[in-house]
Length: 189
Ligand SMILES: [Zn+2]
Image (cartoon, rainbow, N blue to C red; front, side, top):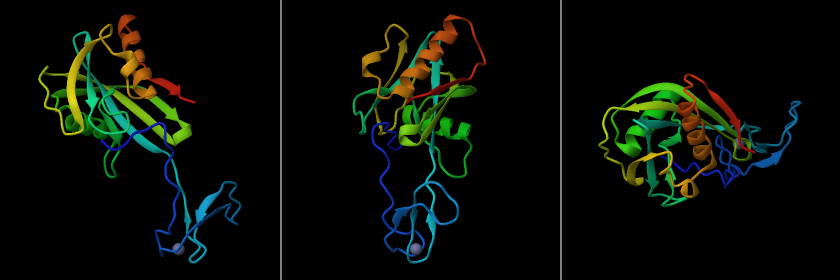
């Protein structure tokens, strides 16, 4: 998983990807209304748009799988398996890939549970339910430990990201109330 920090906005573009010249941030002359990184040498406009973070809520009985982060930011905090979508993969496949990489879990992908917008950092996070097929895990190098928690056992004060916290709350609320197939849309502002 790459850095899915919700506390640091992405670094401004410095150089033109087309010709390497220094860019300037200004409103382009084409009727646009937002500041963009514009290259004064070749006129290329570099558009920046939100990135997608995809992950799962892997569950086993009344427990969910959390991973203890072995990377910054939030080293040592607990998270759901998730990371940035790669090019040439679907959102769902990306969520499955991250679950495999970070937890080394055997699972079946289920339905989408939450779509969370984090406009402050230009990200959209999507989580799918995933049914674990075994309680044995083989976490990758980005994870210190992968462990199952009941709702009561979850270290709520040690959850790495608000998006993960909100998704877990949705998962357990649905479970308690016997709801299935609901997609929660959450704005984290
Ligand atoms: Zn250029």
